[in-house]
Image (cartoon, rainbow, N blue to C red; front, side, top):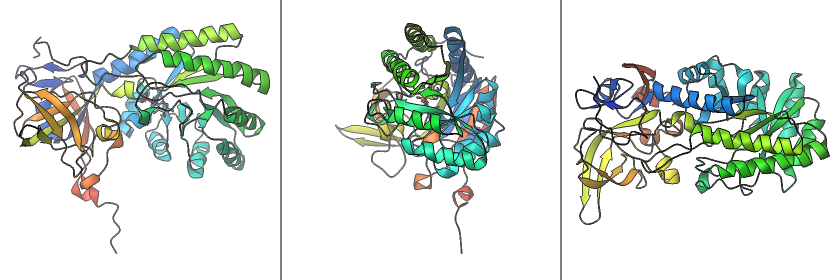
Length: 444
Ligand SMILES: *Cc1c(COP(=O)(O)O)cnc(C)c1O
């Protein structure tokens, strides 16, 4: 039984989050306390209703704004085999950025013709795997990659479809460490240096490569709409003036990448899927119309916006350390091993207490992790009820780039991952055991 008590932080929590009759937080109809007891903490809980809302919302928004469009999920935000199958069932293809991701998608039985391979330094072995399994697209991201891939495709007696990742030189106004569309970036072939044009010319001349079109990705998260419009204008000019008029080939496909923002905190308001779809579709249509080129097939590559809100990290509260007049630290049983985003790029989060989600705030504390780094802080200075050792603390908007970036630092055990829906919890990844930690050791 759920009550109608207004839940604080409702817009960053999973859509099914509610307070149950016991006064506890529930997600997907499952009491979070019960999930923690069953699966242990740290625990990552993914809400199926939120996943369906996010995946379906973006799919519908782009279908409405630009019918000749396709969505591929950026696997690096979070991937394992059962999760890949779930995403495929929602009608999505995939972006992969490593041999490991391609192998995982293959093992999950995913249609590899709907997989796009990205990366600024794909190894010869990874490219050979892509060609071998007939991956849908390889996105060229370096001038030397053209000859490398041509050689591999020729040796395999195949023709590989390719896009070119172009750097439009547009700043998406996100964190320096997650900005990728600017000139000074390791990603993409810049227009202004001539590198993008040279790469396309050599692809067109390569007998085992089929040039399909161009790609850009501004970085992530992009909270503004304007950078998409500006970058698409730059890309349209390049498509028209250089690719069509100078090189003399058509652009059948275009991808503006991903990067769509999500709210991590109560005071954030990311644009809606329809707003991103509208700005991308209208800019591309206007440019194509004005310049007289046919509308290309459009591929979107959202990662974060598909999974961030669906995921919630659940920890158990441990020790308190008071430094009088300075700060109070309260530690939890996870930290940078399962969520390195705070240490990497100063990510900010909210927190909820699943055992008493409606309790009023009483003090400001810093939530620290348990690992041996002073930078292992999860939330600096947050107002919360007075935390008690042994109770649960949950961090919403934890579904993207957390489990995906986890490590075994301090030989931490990687947490379990569950999908919740309609009162059922489905374990899609078990928690690592001590035995797992030694699984790669070679004892003489
Ligand atoms: C990471 C990445 C994405 C996804 O970015 P999100 O912010 O997670 O949507 C899309 N395309 C490329 C090329 C990427 O590297």
